[in-house]
Length: 172
Image 1 (cartoon, helix red, strand yellow):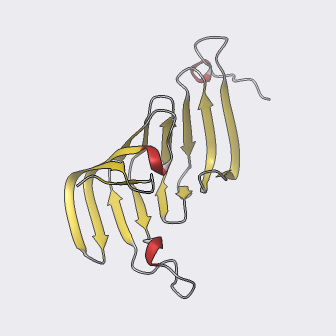
Image 2 (tube, helix red, strand yellow):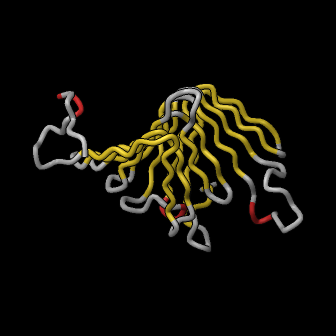
């Protein structure tokens, strides 16, 4: 452990904790959810119960599942509050794994979403998994490119509901 010398980095209350994992890269794997996160630094603040994953350019924060890869320089989550987000520009690449077989490459016809300002996430409190997702809002100069076409917008809000298998599906 290394003491925090800068007062602005210290928690406001002596009972609170600030934990930093630093590495190039730092990798986190959640085997229950099948999520891997790679970044330069993970920060946990007990005061607001918030995780931050950050990277310094040209490195990226990369969050990946079997069907989604997110890339940005800063992602955060407050699982107890059901909130999360991505700060700044980024890219999401989605692959329809239901159409994948052993002969289909992973990159076959992906859908790509890019944005400039950030992404707001809302999920069931304490459930940041695919099952708990409520909404995603992409902010500023959003571009969606998929095999079905292209969408360009200043702001894109997607709402979700539980599907038959319990995973979140678009609420149309």
